[in-house]
Length: 193
Image 1 (cartoon, rainbow, N blue to C red):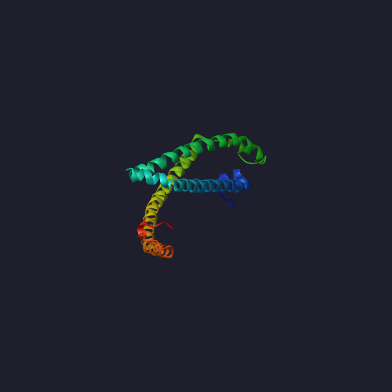
Image 2: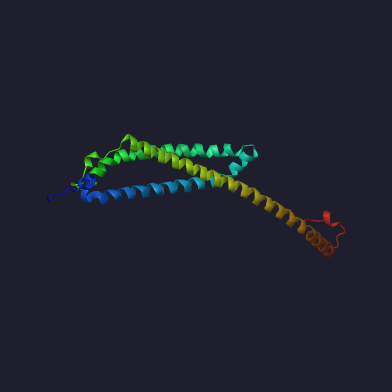
């Protein structure tokens, strides 16, 4: 009878050759988001590391671990909300420019827009990233505070040991000076070196 039917996806017919451009734009957007997330995490860790003295003081005054984490999370939450708002504003302002840069035969270019779902997704990603970065930073800062305590304890013990070792040497030095000058004062009462 010679008749046959073959089905093809409508998406491939509508998008045509622009399919590669669309995937390239998606990949570029995902890469930008990944770099931004890494930057936020790095900045949060650096800020927490620079505040290790403050965190150690709070800890010494009786703050528990959750209270220390809460301070960092509040700062990062504020940063995430501000970042989400700035990103949405930039996306809203940049859409007309994007439409002008697209080729004239780009399929469905008039449908490109900022929907409430995309805005919600971007906001959740921004705030979630900030909170995760805050947790990582708090954990790192907690380790830094503990390391600082251990290091200070070692330095303190090393300082005491060095002073104990310097004591007999200082007495011997003072006794030599006394003999040279002919002083009769005991070494503890003699002049300081």
